[in-house]
Image (cartoon, rainbow, N blue to C red; front, side, top):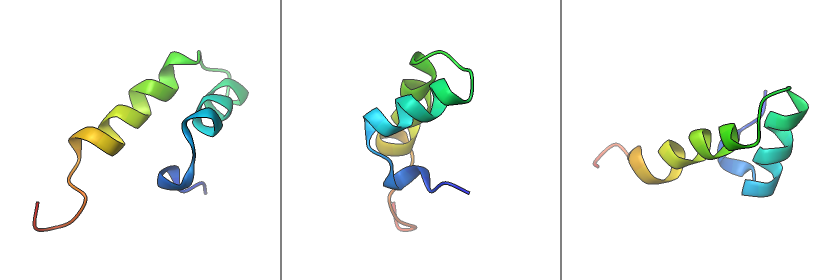
Length: 43
């Protein structure tokens, strides 16, 4: 299993393309991971 937090944006793009999805899906995955979800339990 791939840890999504360890992937660079370019690596995420390649991962979704390799899975057969369009490149924009990488943005849809990364946006919540880094901007919407809390980084720690106290947030």
